[in-house]
Length: 361
Image (cartoon, rainbow, N blue to C red; front, side):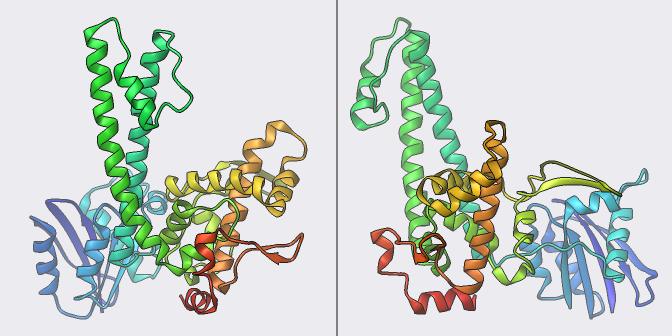
């Protein structure tokens, strides 16, 4: 068995090969696209294992290398920063270090989802960027009104409100131009958001795991699909608390002897999922006595702890989500010991065969 470490770039890649005794067997730099690199590795003596850092396009490389290599491991870049802290750092040295980690089986690996899951994640992130752009446009239009002390109607972003906004008289031609361009961008972004959400709705409502998570009070389709897409395979988490670390909802820790300092949350993983989970926590504490009781227990009647309490509640909901996906059980309110009544659109789709499918995932 040979062990290959890769340092991959867009138009230049370096690989280092170790033999069965851990000695450097070959070291090369390949100039060109990844297809040329894959062809070069395919001509090597087999079997061999490959390790490289996670970066843009890591999924494509994983799919292609899995066809020619005995084992492919993708290393967690954030953890490699501590391992590779060195004053002598270049592509050849990095490739050799990756190969050595692979040889001693100490690579901090990440989960590589299937291509359809990667595409699902990408379209979720794309929708989030479109919604953020829409918010910036609306803020720009509101700034125009505030700068002239114009009070807008209550429902500014309805069809009637936008028509009113397009017809107001502004002093400067340049302000009118800016207003018109912002309205054009808003109309364009609204159409793109609607198109993306239509595709996401079709995917989400057909997924048993998404429908199961939507039985949690305060969790809507957007939150459920994002959590499901990033969890992907519930069985890969050995403990429920591990999912909190995966999404960066646990505090940083500096413990030594009797001292234990907890800081801000780590913010690892997808920021989009964290944002949606916090929004779901605010909604959940209004709709469920069980979630509200957890929030108030962390709050301790101290208004200064609101942020701590809501993040902890989001973490709690996330752990419940993983447990539900593992067992296939719908949300239950402990105070009444009754199953939470889901929205009308979900009552027809949550049944035993679907729950069995989720548990089998």
